[in-house]
Figure 1: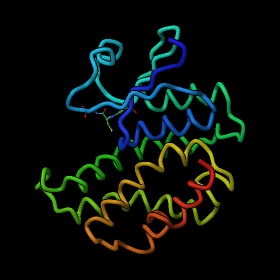
Figure 2: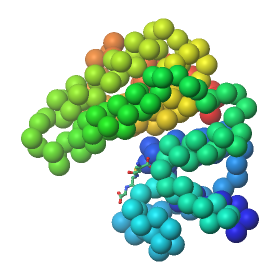
Figure 3: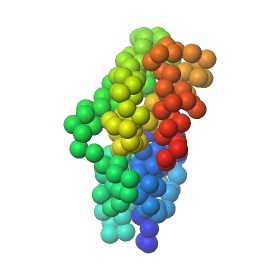
Figure 4: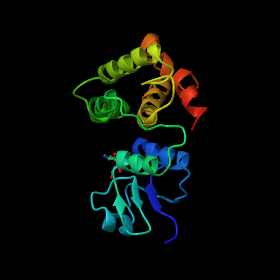
Length: 194
Ligand SMILES: N[C@@H](CCC(=O)N[C@@H](CS)C(=O)NCC(=O)O)C(=O)O
């Protein structure tokens, strides 16, 4: 094996954050796109929990959590200083990967979660968006005027949320999701660097 192998799924926000960090760090990987319903045997053999992304290094080491893949890539090369010791970072990521992701899944697949309406799930997600919006009112990016790992780790999830709103022709609360609409504010700023 000459290059690391990255098992990935194109639309998965976890895989997306890993791919962005690897690309930014200039680490060439062999991307193996998977089908979630038919996971490759090799992937399951090295990481039985069966989630993507999974990075397999040439020495056989396996990194199968997206944040760990990001940390590994940035520890190898971080030309623009994405790494940050800001104490808000773990808190924001925990909220994103926890309550916000739960609301996102329910908003996206509202018919599978009939306990509440899509509107309720959207409002739950928007609580996090409001928090991000307040941070973006202070700086160009979430934690400062320059991009950090926080933006890259969180952005794919926000993008997915705004795409559901677009699909539902749901304009949403303009003041809270304005920065995240495709082609606007936050996404545009991020796309100019990754
Ligand atoms: N905590 C994991 C979560 C990864 C995750 O849940 N990925 C989803 C795809 S977006 C997955 O592989 N799910 C397995 C499945 O649906 O079978 C990480 O950060 O890497």
